[in-house]
Structures are given as C-alpha cells and as structure tokens.
Image (cartoon, rainbow, N blue to C red; front, side, top):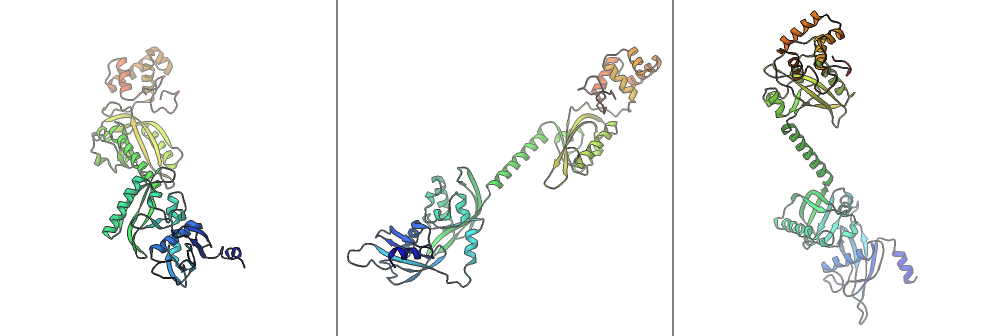
Length: 427
C-alpha cells in the first residue's frame, strides 16, 4: 500500500493527520475529523496553547487532548532526521463516554445562539444558531477573532462586556444590538457568564434573537401612542365599547360633552348615553350587525343625552375591532358634527318633519299643503305647533332651529331627516 492509498483509506474516518512546518503552518492534512486545513490549524494551535505537540511539555508519546468538546488520542512526535523542520502527527477522535454526550448535541443544535470566547476575543466554540445570526457556518466562526465577525464599534462594546463578566465572576442578563448579515441592526436578549474551557477562564453567552419581536412591540407602542393622541387630543368623541355594549375606553372630549367624569364613564352601558329617539333603533340594528360580523363599519346619527338630561345630536362612525380570537373584541364609536346642547323636546310626527323639510327646500305654504294634501287650516295648525315646540316665531327661524337641533341633516339635499332610511324620503 503506497502513501496515496493510505491517505484515501483515512479520508472518511474520524481521524486527522497532518504535516506542519515549524510555524504551525499546515503543509498537508487529511481525514474527516475536521473540516479542511482551517479546522486542522485550529486544532494544532489549541494543542500548542496547552503545551502539547513537539517541544511541548507532553513529550513525544501519545496523549489525550480535548478540543471543542471532543476528545482525541494524539500522537505528534518531534521531527525525525537531522535538519528536518516539518513534523507529522495524527489525532483519532475517541468516545470515552458510553452513552455519548447528549448535552453537546443539544448545545450544537439548540435554536438559541451560544458561543464561548477566550479573554482576548477569540471564538473557541459556537453553535449553528450563533453562526446563523451572521449568515455563516460555525466552522467559519470558531477560531476567528471577534473583530473578524463584528464591526469595530461592536467589537469594543462586546469585549468590554466580556471583561465585565470576567471581573464580576457572575452571569449578566441583558439585551444588546448587533449588525446582522443583511446589514440591518438586530437585537438579542440573553445571558453572558464566565466558564472554564480547559485551563483557561473564558466567557460564554447564550442569546435569543428578538429583532422581529422588538419591531412588532415598537410598532404596537407607536400605534397605542397614536391612538391615545387621537382619542384624547383630537377633539373627536372617541369611545370603545365591549361586545356587551359597555364603555371600556373613552376620550376626555366624550366626558366633557356628556358632563360626566371620565372615571364614572368607564363601565357604563353605552345604551344609557343615547336619547330615546327614532335614531336609537337604527343604532341598535347597526350594533347587532357589527357584533355578529355581518358588517365591519357603519355610519349613522344619534342623539346623546348627558348627565343633566340635555341632548346633543352627532354623527356616529362605528367600526368593529377584530382581535386574535374569532369574533369581534369590541367596537370603536367616533362622534363628529356635534350639535348644540339643548333640552329634550317632544317627538315630532312624520308630518311635522316633512313640513320642516319642505320649508327648508323653499316651498310656499300653498305648495306644502298641496304636496301633503292638507287643508290650509290644518297646515296652519301644524306650523303653529312647530313654532311652539321649537321656540321659533318665523319660517326662517323654524328652518334654522331644525338644522341646529339635528332634525334635518345638514349634509343632504333635498332636506331630509338624518334618521330617514331612504335618501329619497324626507322622513
């Protein structure tokens, strides 16, 4: 068997053979114990640091050595022959534990990123998750210095943390930022603690990448801050209702409009804030559609009643809130176009509302009587009743009061009631 056959025989086995020069430079190597010459060089440097190898304290005889959690039977004698500068050696991986080391496999394949560095910042060990943070493999990390992996600013900060851990002698839990493989800033949370690696006191760390979680949390905090600003400082009437119709959140504008303390408003049934008007039934129907999921949003008009019993008409925008669980978790109600505060007034009949709508459209008494098929005496009676009910002495005053009190919608033409289900109908 020649040398080439012998190298081919060792290539698939868990051994490593090498030929090195006096400067520990690997001239030739083989075997499957390490991933190429880079892994072999790291192994030789670790042996040399422990005083093993040629001219080391271990002598020429075979000995055992630990490297990256693995045990090897090593034979690395002095160079033979006069003037020979190159040395040859062989290392055979051993399993001196009957059942292996399940913790080593767990550490290598754990989803949490873990590493071990010596006091100078050189990586002695890293698992696959740690290498993944930097977009590389663990074999490309182990043996390299921290400066070869991170940016200069991060290197200074991380080495300072290492020294802090070594000085204190106890674990430190913290969150740090780092530069990811894609160039973006990442965040990780975990522990850094002192460990013994052979005869050297080193620093180990185990971290979980919380970048995505932190981004989602930041987005949530910004959304909550925006919502609080909208709810408390926009001047809009903003109320969040639970699925059973009780107030869970409200802005200060709502408390001011209803003449009630904000703390007293919490937990009140939303239905108690609505006056008993025709619009109330429409709000109930829309609410049932929102809670059942048949609608996501709706707009309607409602008459609000404050703590002192006075009324104010408003346009209400209702939006269902869908949470992570099935169903609706709540409803936001936003009130706009808030009318003047006035005392509760008797309900107007459909005929009286139609008379006001026709007055607002500019029709004469004769046109109104003909359209509604009323006699002049009957129309005069209705107009006198409206003047008394609305406290308005003239036709323009009747129309103005109808708009101010919300009896007629200010955003539609021809004039009609905000509660009219059909846009073509005045009532």
